[in-house]
Length: 387
Ligand code: ZN
Image (cartoon, rainbow, N blue to C red; front, top):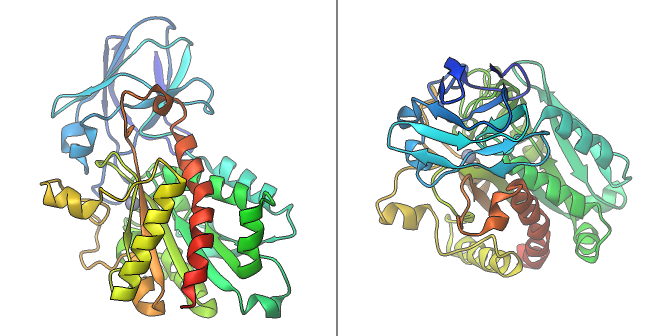
């Protein structure tokens, strides 16, 4: 039996793997911080034999409360993913699975590779509506890619609403990039909603804010150990160029609507938060969320971090053990700087309804669907942006 992680976003440490019923692993953790949650590994083994895979330090991971009612995902081809029986006893996370084939991958959530990112970008650029701008480079010299989707002359573009959408500041939250894939596909599909949107707005999309962390298999931080969604007030060009350059591009052109896409380890529902700096924005945020709930059954407004904390739940997307203590998250910065509606979206690592078998097959499809549906809600919200 052999367990490997020497590929894009691979991450786990092997303690022993001498018998299918005695496989013990340890989370590897982010390269420059104490965060540990993401895992992704490949196992070459004997097919059709029960395997017991134990992650022995799950109880001391960054979001240990997230393991309750969680099921890992597996794949034989890296394309189709499915949930596998997983149990958490407060200390160990145990995966019980009988692989049908000799080669099987396991992950925290369906991984999103750099190769796929490149393919989506290349495909999008065959459309005349798309422009690619490399805003700068990460600490490990990867490009920080901005995709601009718009229609019309440049001078006309100045009058259009500027919709900024960023994803995957936290690299382990791969659902965010699946979401962006669904959104881009519909935006370029020529459907009626997309056409109307592009009449009135231009989209600025950063599909992956943290390509270094993604490639390294980090969960929370970039290559220098920074939690990107904590330093928007003063991003260092050296340590957090990802935010430094995106923020610079926002200041150069302005922002009329901002969405920051994430995943949450603990809460089994999709929800949005933001729009808290004025009564007008609070009302606009609620209208936006209620509309989204109407167009996609995988989104809801009843449960979020406020209700979660009120019910005694633990922390969320803001918590971190990275080197930055003071924190300004992206939505707070954008809302206070540009005075526009700025919301973050959280999608779950878990199935929101464990009894619904449809949620156990390709969970990334739910994220793509949410991305496509968001366009209906943005179109609905655009009319209100200028009021
Ligand atoms: Zn996040």
